[in-house]
Amino acid sequence: MKPEEILRIVDAIHRDKNIDKEIVFQAIESALVTALLRHYGEEAEVIIRINRQSGAIAGTHDGTNIDPEEITGRIGAQTAKQVIIQKIREAERDSIHDEYEEQVGQMVSGLVTRFDGGVATVSLGVTEAILPRSEQIPGESFHVNERIRATIFEVRKSGSRVKIILSRIRPQLVQRLFEQEIPEIIDGVIEIRAISREPGYRSKVAVISSDNRVDCVGACVGVRGNRIKNIVEELGGERIDIVRWNDDLQVLVPNALQPAEVDEVILCQMLGRGIVLVGEDQLSLAIGRRGQNVRLASKLCGWDIEIMTREELDQQIERAVDGFSSIEGLEESVAERLVGEGFLSYDDLSVIEPDDLMEMGELSAEAVDAIVNEAENRATVAEEAAANERRKQREQEHVEEVPGEVEVGDAEEETPPA
Image (cartoon, rainbow, N blue to C red; front, side, top):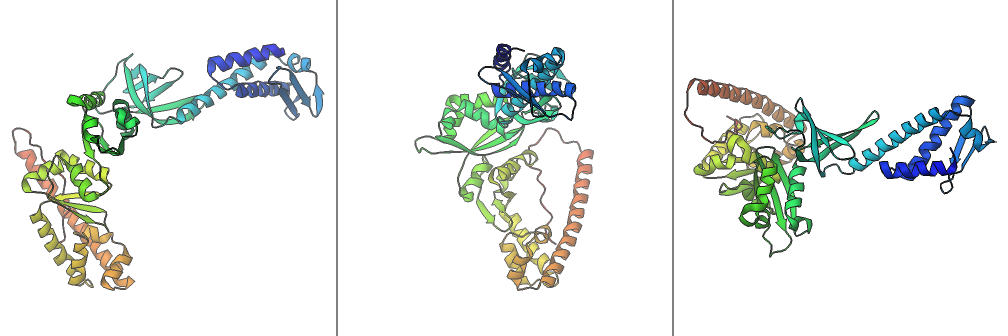
């Protein structure tokens, strides 16, 4: 290869493959070294350098200069070509990998080229990606030439290729769609603080405004709901609740549980739990269908949220005090302090930090271990009893035919101490 030919090759590959020129030069140098080693033997020391400006080749063999004509003349053109192609493919793979690895979590748009076995192959232009069934919104399907949007979930090298995995079920897709539809987010006026999602069914998005003149919820909804409507359509009808963020959990938790009305929030710091009191008429709405509303609210706030009425709380408190007091070595005054901190079941007591219990009751380490072990045993018995009760209820529901479908929260309350 003549110097000008090398420069033409480098320029062409740089333009066509979008590969850095330095990488191409290094690939050609490596190809020439590989080819010469086949001639001189694998034990030889061969160094090749190409002048980046002129394209001139210089090299040494075991410290002795090699005639440039010999470098290109002694090796087979086909051999050099094959090695160069291999190196360029590796460089191209690395370039694609690095480009898309930087975009993990970002949204991309592409055309479906195949949909087979539930897996969609998507063309992103310079390369292809796959959208596995496990990363698709439940119930959705695609057809060839359909344009879809998804986030890049994972990028990894797989042999000589790059495997790019897309996702439509992650919270990042909701965030990117909000950024696309709501200019105030890109401008920094509105910030998304948290997202909890059950793909295909419901999402909660907590937002806050840095400008008191801009209503963060109203801006996200848009005039006549046009902004949120576009997002809902992209997600196949997934319901989206826009929640007004507040750093105060006493405010955030009720916001996250809307449209249910909350009477009181009791924060149990030691357990990271919020006990939310609602009226009897709000109980099902607060819990949501199959526990979805409270589950999403818990994820959004980062706290375990338990919904109950005031009467249910009073009953649990009474049972907890009686149950804890019946454990040998645990006085009633300590039991009352535990309940005051939100410990309402044997399961709660079984996970208490030993140092906390020692401090509360001025107990020895041995006494604390005995109390925790007894709580674990009673929690197991209580869970078995609750499981049997749930089984009986399912059997009864199977026998009885109930017309229609009633939306109720089926969040199972933990069996309290008895």
